[in-house]
Structures are given as C-alpha cells and as structure tokens.
Length: 254
Image (cartoon, rainbow, N blue to C red; front, side, top):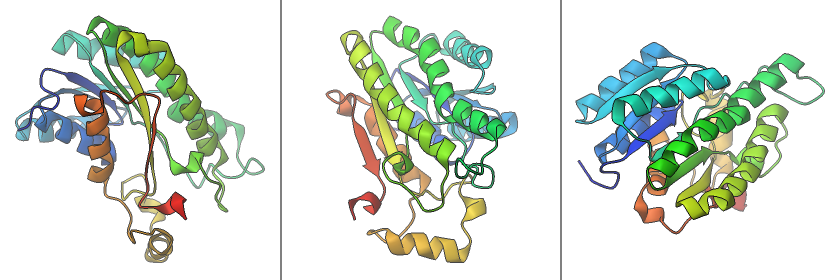
C-alpha cells in the first residue's frame, strides 16, 4: 500500500469496469477511500470487492450519471459514508459506434443520450461534488476526454466528438473558477484503450489497423490511463490545473 492519496476520498464515475475499475483499485492501494459510481450495480459491487481484497475501503453507489437526482444521491451517499470528498474522477462515458455516427445518420435520441452521459454527467458531478471539495479545503477534478476531441476521424462519431470537445472548455472554465479554492481541474485525452467499451469493435483486423497507426505500436491497457489519473489526483500534480494530458501512444503526434 502506498500513501499518495492517504486520507482522501475519491468519487469515480464509471467505476464498475475498464479504466474506472483499474483507477478504483489503484487509488485504494495509494490510501484513498473510493466511491464507485456506476449504472451497473453488480459490476460496481465487484469493483468494491476488488478494492477490499487489495486492502482498501470502497462503497458502491448506483445511478445514471445523466440524471441530476441520481448524481446528487451518489455524492451524498459517498459523503455520508466517508465524511468528505477530495477527488472527483469523471470517468463515465459511452462509445456507441453503431448508433453514434455522422450528423447525417444519427437519430436525435442517440445524440441526446450520448451528450447526456459524456458531457452533461460532468456538469452534475461537478455541480454537486465541488462544494464538498471546497469544504475539504481543496481537491482534484479529473475529466475523461478523448483524442476524438483533438482530431477528426473518417468513421464519424459526432455526438461523442462534440461531447468530448465540450469537456475541454468546461475543464478550463472550472480550473479558473476554483483555483482560489485550491481545486485543480485537468482533462485526460486517451487514445484507444483495450476496455469492455471498445472490445465489441476490436476484431483482429481493426486491432491491427489501430496498432499500425500508433507509434508505440499497441493499444493502451486501462491501467496506463488510470495511472495518469492517479498522478492528477495526487499532490504530485499540485501545480497543474486547466491542463490537457494526451495519453495516446503518440497517435496524435504524427
């Protein structure tokens, strides 16, 4: 067990699997108490069991991050259990390549749902979470962006892209607003990551195509993104706010 997050409580949305699950276990190993927020109750509870097996403390809170009432309850349950919040990791998101395509092809209901989960959810988490960070004397807000916000792709996902682009501006606004309260806000832009979200789209041919275009030569593992989130959550990143961290194996450098 480490101590980089000793005495801190972190809320991780989308904490039931993939990057969120890796972050929950990693944060706990560094001393954090973890509030695992997700719409999948069984998977969230499994993450809690993994945290506890690693010697940490965690609480599963179930809800839809697109709904204000659910997010408010998730925050309140976490504070009720652990007494405070210090880290908000806005990790929840969806990647629906079959429903989210070009503006010419995407139905309004899927546009609205993608925007609600990927962008509006961060509004709710920060609206209800930041007051608790202020009461704690400061903290860290970590937002999950995407390289899709930085470059265009032939296979369009316009709702996802628009949501992730909006998160960049929101990150900078929050960073400036709350710096005086010792609250930092930064955004991570992962490239393609081998998660349950991506796996339905990663057949052998697609995987090989991606790997060919990545200078490092492979797709990222969830822990590699979670480790960047740990850095931002910790005091190691005490002088960073409003920053965009691109973690894509060199994809956007080409």
